[in-house]
Image 1 (cartoon, helix red, strand yellow):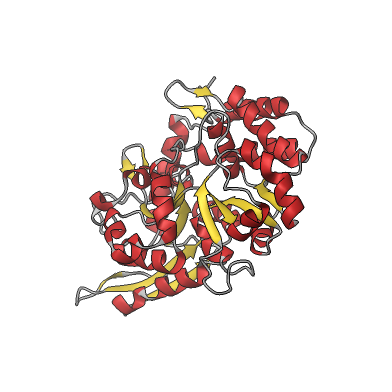
Image 2 (cartoon, helix red, strand yellow):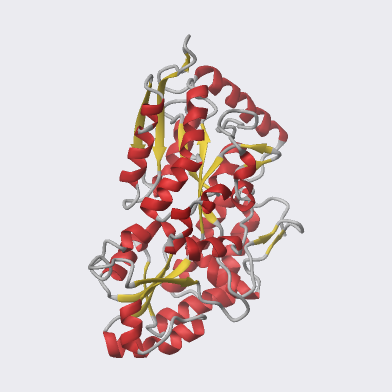
Amino acid sequence: MRRGIGATALIAGLALAATACGSDSDDARSGADGKIEGTVTYWDTSNDGEKATFKKIAEDFEKKHPKVDVKYVHVNFGDANQKFKNAAGGNSGAPDVMRTEVAWVADFANLGYLAPLDGTPALDNASDYLETAAGSTRFEGKTYAVPQVTDTLGLFYNKRLLKKAGVGVPTSFAELKKNAAKIKDRTGATALYLRGDDPYWFLPYLYGEGGDLIDTEHKKVTVDDRPGVRALATMKDLVDSKAAVTDSSDGQENGIKAFQDGDVAMIIDGPWDIALAREGKEFKDGDKDDNLGVAPVPAGSKAQGSPQGGWNLSVYAGTKNMRAAQEFAKYMSSAEVQARTTEELSLLPTRKSVYEKDAVKKNEMVEFFRPAVAKAVQRPWIAEGNSLFEPIRVGVDGVLAGGKSPAAAAEGTGDKFRKLLKGYH
């Protein structure tokens, strides 16, 4: 929701008060010897396949700065946004640094909860960042985060199952539906696991029909235009025809398990789940990369498109450890750390220089996902951007599980958008 001048002024005052009061962490400062010291509390929102690596990387900061104590806290992605808002808004318990989803930055910055990073140690070698990744860190002319990981969605597929079925990797949802019966008859597996519980997964269907959520230039809601209706109809048709299975909850866990076990031949997913996929029985024996394939998300009737995603590192405006927090954000977004996460987790770097490293160039998943990210569709980096996803989730669930027509669900989603976006028609 857009805020008036009075509300904005109030938020700015709260942000200044928060900065003065600080977080619950110990004070951090530069000692007499110039070394950084104190405590940095870090909230990490990575998934189960990534968190052990990120914990080790975060704690390795202490080797570079022995007088700094890093307190690593893993926070579930689904809880992290509201948990941070509660802590920052109450000026109690907020972390010094947080791994923030790209859509959260503008929202948190608008509320006054993030420290601007322009001209600080955190924003190191800024020209090295991919422009698409850096775009999500900016709000109203200031930089409120540093890019850590960029991503988009791709089609993970089981090479063995598709070969056994005698079908190729689908380039469109229509082709996927056409070949679903062969896959089921010849392998016993369902063609696709369709994520119906997370609105982010709606976007490839919307882009595939030539649509978008909103038109920021003309202040127009577009999610309920004809492409939005067709997108919901495509999802419903895949499920109704049994070309896909879906779940209204726990789609992340259930979907990746079904793919790991070979119960489904394909799943639309991102680089963050590569490590988890490889832990499954279908992919872990022998050369664990051999049976896992990745291709572009199938096209709709008009186009092929996938959303830009990723993660940034933000510094809490109220931290008492500003210098140490800035240095920690700089380290976690450094070329050294990004090369490490690419090697160990196949995550996509946000720094151009990292893509020039031999080990990164040879990474099979980077080879696919880098051009996919370059073509990814930019999301609207507005303060209300993250709030748009809940109406989408409700609309998708209404179609897939609630018996709503695609037209009615699209109309309801558009109406909710207009209530959230003042001035949009």
